[in-house]
Amino acid sequence: MERAIYRFLHLVFALGSLHLLLLLGLEVQRNVHIQREIAATKLRVAQLEQQKQKLLEELQTAADPRYREGLARQMGYVHKDEHLYPRARLER
View 1 (tube, helix red, strand yellow):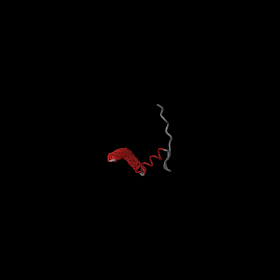
View 2 (view 1 turned 180 degrees about the vertical axis):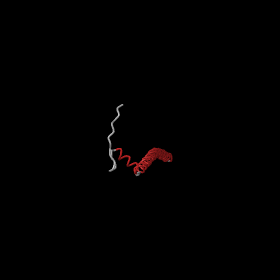
View 3 (view 1 turned 120 degrees about the vertical axis):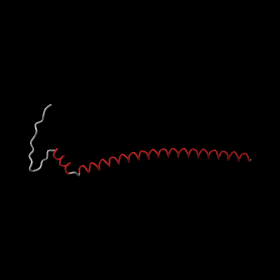
View 4 (view 1 turned 90 degrees about the horizontal axis):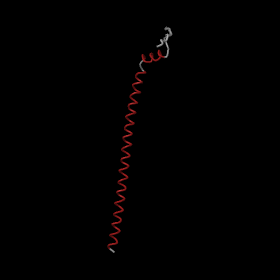
């Protein structure tokens, strides 16, 4: 009778150990997945920071009146007291 209970306890111990190893493996896998997600998120944040900086620089440039005047002149606009003379295109 004593031997039967020991066999049962060994079986329970073996199954418990197997279950513990399975859970440990799942936790390691989940940890690796989370670490990858964190790395990808940090990369995305860095990209967004660069994009934000670029947009801020563009906003500062657009706030300059000389820049806006240059853009308007490229589109052919002139001041009310100026005249626009078309240039002949040089052929190459």
